Length: 371
Image (cartoon, rainbow, N blue to C red; front, side, top):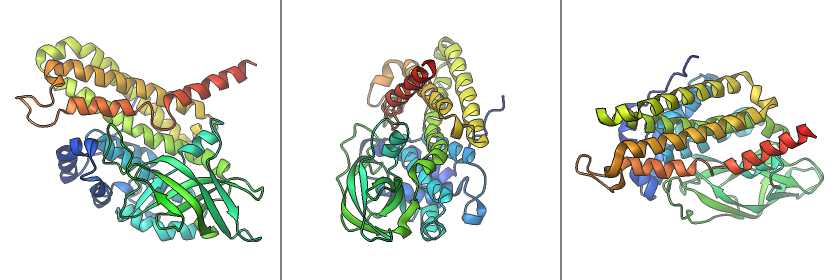
């Protein structure tokens, strides 16, 4: 087994993330800074073909870049995932004009991209119906009125964003995926959601009431086919958050006192080995395209990675001991990173698709196979 090469962050970005990780988790003071800083560091270009303005490499490289950010701030990694996933949609879209219009600003971090396709991914797995609807405004199908609501989307920067969402069509055509800009008439962004953590992630709800767009904003006219192709990257990039958080929690165990390390070393080594094994399987499945035809295998990986995150952060708490239960302690004045990592880990099971949804989908598949 060859462990995936970890991505090295620029020193200035790593320092900024470490300095502001607590604030990014607990308030929105630095929410506007995340996308520009990640953009200036070139992270959005990782895994993007050079022909499109990227740095080259693979989706696996982008997964590792997200993991590197998640080591220091899951809120920032969550934003990174949203931005990079929207970029991936443009790369996979046949709408070359839309890609040319938006990709440069997204890669540079001058504009935010958000993935509102969590509902659509659940629709693809028959978990819930689409919540957004498109009404044609002409017989040629060149203009549409968009309606509906999405209750939870990340990276909706108040300074400007574009969001991908899937819409049922009222004209009998397959559901379609549109890119919707923040200033589309009829678009309303809520206040930031009152989250218990990751509060610097610009997470809010969107409502569309008769928002009018033309066909130039179509990412793809066939949502089901597009989502099937895009889902491995959607979930793979999302798994980067779990990989990075688990690595950092285990690093904290390794950095504890000799006596504590000796007591926990067997558990830590076992988790590290499991984490490396899962990361290799994730990289191989994304690179080979195997997850397109076998999504259940990737669902199982995401579930397993969440279990590793949970176990690693609990080991982190054990290593910290009583001092980890203090907001700050004398040997390490300032925010308690162990407590923050525990809050971050609590988010991993519920990010869409949640573990409950994935387990339900797997159980349904097993019942179908048995029948």
